[in-house]
Length: 416
Image (cartoon, rainbow, N blue to C red; front, side):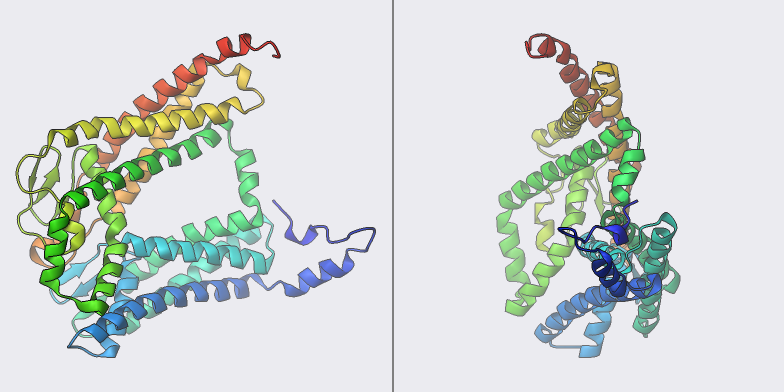
């Protein structure tokens, strides 16, 4: 792994002792770096949520500032999939927009911890990642204990485990990227898997992009619903800012629900509801502008049924092209046949399916008592499996066809 303390600092014959000693003086112990970076991430997330909650309190006519701060902390905990109970209802639907923001903060925090500690050995990097996640999780545990009050109850264990998991994944990614260990891991990874990973992420991004476009089109079609909801809410300027922040936090959830819709099994917005290409049975919905795109009860348009087959195939084609492009750049590309490229394309589709399953499983939960106790993708495994199958077909065929044309192209090139 990259030794951050051995970077050359001398120029034109100058001694490198001064730069090296200066770098060594600026480094901090692993635990100190982990505490500072994790604490900064903790405060950034909490202050952001508290600020939005206080803005909402200013627009409201009830409650106190302390209650608004507690609501912001509870939202921060829910973003970590902590179990929060408000009265008779449980809230566990993580606003993934906020979760992504926290993950980005933790990623930057991991990079900062690696930079300040100058860790470069595998043991030190693992200790740094573990300490970073543990400090952040302990902070979440304290927040959970301080937030619980009266009707608002928080599970300390779920808060600790959720925060630890997010900090470990995002923080370790930042530590690996900053320390240079990522390059070493990539060099040690087999070529096939090394090509399949970026192809899988390309497929996932393609599915997200297509789902986002469809969602935007549906919102535009039902724009009158949005204006009607805004008039009904009559939130005012400050309330509209808070409403926009809420919609922004829940937007990734809605896009994932569209992904599940395109997969076939669909999703639900309450107990006993169904929103799928085969039909919609949802009834009345809350006056949230994000829900304006939900089709009315009954059968869905035929073009939505066609998209269930087209979207995974397009994502598979993108993955297949990425696999071929990366595979042809390898030194031993001449030894790879079309079947090897097809296998890599199928591997990429499988990895993409796993990522989509994890995201769809995280996007659901409970949003309150009664009917709102079941929201999300109940058949996440089936949806991810169908998407992976379609992507595998598109990726394998594309990779095989494009790579099989290579010998003819090479033979016709006089310089080869």
